[in-house]
Length: 237
Image 1: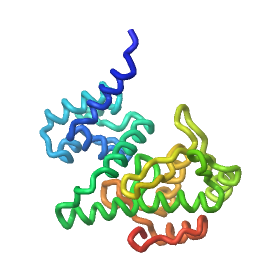
Image 2: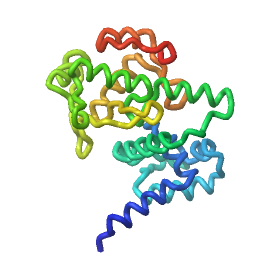
Image 3: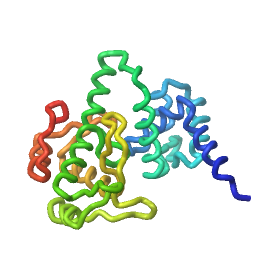
């Protein structure tokens, strides 16, 4: 018996409607696998509560899990799920004008996230939007109807970066991803993932601590200027 679309939509919405489960999903947008204990500590809940929530998310297809010894690791089930979470976060942030960081530490973390971060496996924040804008300004990224790489854009990836992005399965080559801090789109899809991987592998960006926030290095600042003419705000670099 086939489940009606409205029933499936309601079930998925219900999974993400709980605050603890939403915090888990947002944390997992860093693209890495977390243990149940790490997520419990992150959300400030007991291990048994975390286990119950994680089981529901796994059963609902939002998370995938694997076990190694006594540890239970979970990650987002795939890029499509990550895109859903980020899009929902973007829409939620657009309608929330009251939320402000409560402490100086939280304010600093929020500033770092807004400047540059990973969105699952691609670049986001002011850095991600600046890169998308630069690609578009040079005719490498077409934004007339959605996102698409031009012929020159594909050549730029292969010649200037030395990589060849390709669509994989149901994931498109490029897609616009709504940035929840900038309220504009950055580059998602497999091309966005390849670009982020290159930045990390070449040390152009480094992670700040163990979270999603990134810092652009001096070599990254030079590379961005040479490759795309991007001059970053000092708060990003």
